[in-house]
Length: 284
Image 1 (cartoon, rainbow, N blue to C red):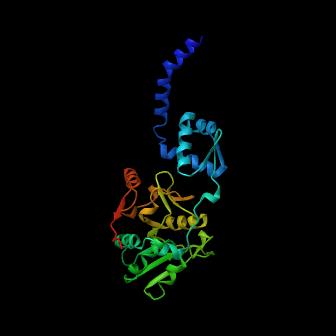
Image 2 (image 1 turned 180 degrees about the vertical axis):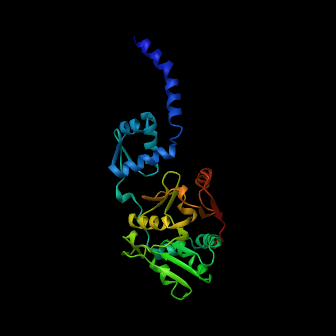
Image 3 (image 1 turned 180 degrees about the horizontal axis):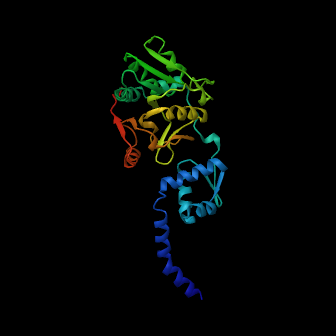
């Protein structure tokens, strides 16, 4: 009897493996792992059996996914599944003034490239990132613009530019980023030609992510008003995953980064058909 069972297992295993491969052609590794993270975020834990049943893949495949996600610091494996990592494992956010002075050469080079996408008379969204802040002196050179931003620092730096209209949302003050958050519905009802947004993480799994849930909501609300959304992020953010994904690659017109970004991640994003521009910066 054992010999018969072994024969059938050996005979049909390749057929089963091929069948599973075909049925999952549309569910790529990155997509499957993103779904795992989404369920983990919602429920706090996941089980190998449930994921295997839901995604119609083998338990071995799910365990490989969980192992890879654990190596990236996104979860902790347990017996039969995984749980969310402790909050203390998340790197704390640096204040705006600290971030403003970090990697200045990269941010300035990114801004010089990004400004070519702006035209006189445009309505432009800027989030509270230090990379978007690098655009301010370049934007002042235009004769007429409308700027919408949740950054109090950015708004303040347009005080000496009366030819530029600045619009701010309502909400509460977030001190770490010196920004207004909490009420995305309080954004002015205006159509925007283009928006520039920073990110704390860009990866093939987490896609475009940031560290604060309230900031993410404001970013997403501004993006929905933009004809084109552009991600500005220096090379250090590539290959990183922050807690909250605020945009998928398919939602943005372009990503502009410095040429010290991780080559494998940049190549992977380009293979998805997304435009990635890398700019050189002067090493000071």
